[in-house]
Length: 195
Image (cartoon, rainbow, N blue to C red; front, side, top):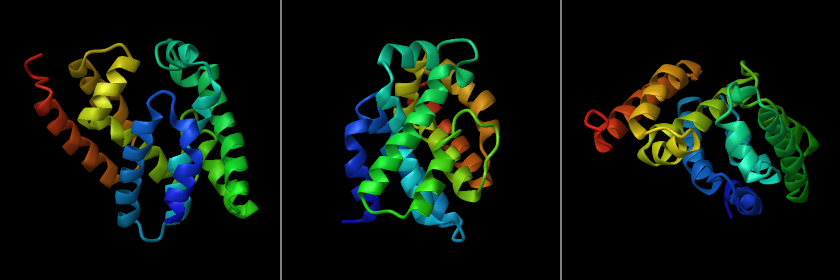
């Protein structure tokens, strides 16, 4: 079995919250696209980190996730955001140890997961890939459909937010290109110029 899929399968039980069973596979696809553009990146580190980056949401009450983590003022610095990162580090460390990964590799994954939402800088190319892939899925029809509900916004308003607030947070030029292309297609498919 592909080692990425082995990690995915081991983490599956943690993905049944906050639509992570949709978010993570789509983000993984974007990470693989970005990895292709950066052959000097550690592909396994970036791919496994994106698979595990949000499993910490599993440990948090779902009402708190949405009320504190998405709908409060200053939601990006809410306690649940920090908690999902620290829980993600804890759960991914246990999971990767059980799968036989080295302590060095586990620490690198943990360094990416810790702060992937709350830190305003990246630590490495692999971190940039994960941070961008984590956001890029939102530009798809599926991403807009899911996330506009999280933020209690219409698809059109959420698409506008993606353009003004999320594109400037992307690190890699290829990510910006993908985001703009996907957003244009999503706006067209969801008739955002009409409704």
